[in-house]
Length: 604
Image (cartoon, one colour):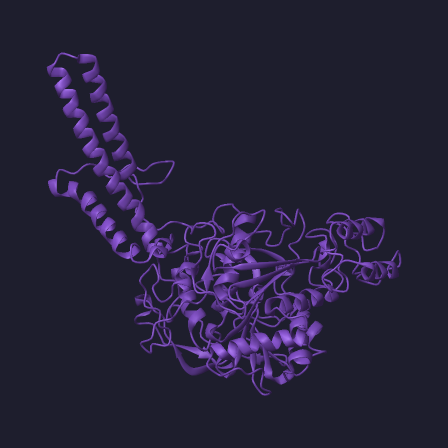
């Protein structure tokens, strides 16, 4: 058995007696060098491509080997001449230098791991950005929106209105949609987003047309109604199990805010909105909080009991772009997805342990396809190509097919990540406060929105991997591989021909992938003005004194604060003191924040 390095995990192969094998490394290095030069010289930006980042270290090692070989040969010749002239000390020193060069070059070249890098460099975008403002992701953080004490505190449940403030959540969604579209009016913002989508779909520059349906996919995984591969037993009751009562699902407050905007701002009839998770049940607890206000909305779930609507499949086929699906039963898109003109992807901000690393927008589609058909011995198992089963980068990822199919991810109008609480799927406890700034041992109290499926998951990845660095979670090798594949879907690192409709046309780039510069500043290339990648807009409600949202802190804001002084409404907008000092009342702590902002130039 070959020895394994305890530090790196590399396998070191024993020397073989076959003479031809000694030429494998030099020939491979030469081929990588030729390939790198042919691809990069005509277009230098290709150096950032994942395939070139794999080839570059091998080509570099080959060049280093050649240089070292030539240098050591020259030194040994010099040493031989010194020995001949009886200058032994210098001869020995030259020989030692030559041996050192050979050893260094060999150690640098032979121990190079021939695999894709785990990450793209910071601020090095790949793919083509999407959205009315390309690559834009909006992050809204309001620490006052959540005030649950946590597990084992006898403080009720996170999803109750007393712990997740509906009015603060309304504000967060309104601000995020306006910022995403670059509009101050909410109706105009939605119109801009819809018009962009319709132009991209070759429908023309048109807004929402009455009668068009909108499908909203949420994540109710703790209410899963089927058991996969001998996993946990299915849920048959429509009440949340007591063991999962505080598992982080989509908050009813955010779902209600979204429905309100679609109905009362966009003008969508309630009956033209479908919301649910096809492999799960619409729990009574959340349904009872939303249904009275929106009784005609279609509440989609697996069984269709209690006035819910059961998910059924259509006749539109869905094809997997992998041989792993060969011989498996044919998949079909669910009928609500086919009927919908627009799709809103609404996952929860979660890590995904012992499987995918993270589970946000792309992974949310694992519940988009196969509600009525659950036998994974007959159907292609999506989990066989997750990072747990296929680690590292450069592999086929089924999420790309789901993101790109014209009747699934191809209809994405909006991605909306619910990060009010977030959590860890596959770990206990699954819900816990976040430690990194600006959360600082508090709930994330955030939502993220974008029209770029890849960009928003890239931002979510950066947040999740920064928060949870323990093993078997976001740091699993290959967690972000689907982002590379999706960004470069027309020419992915795995060389997969992604064609989920099987019409002979490969998917184009599905969005832009990039990492922030650092966890403190959280800036991407568009923020820095260095590239055409991601732009992260940050709206921090707990840090602004611009109460009337006119872009300036002035006497008008002081009047609003005065009206709430010591006698606040249920959610005082002027309670803006830093996290830890927020106390539900407007007082001198809040006046200090307003005055400091005013004196520093009036910019919120």
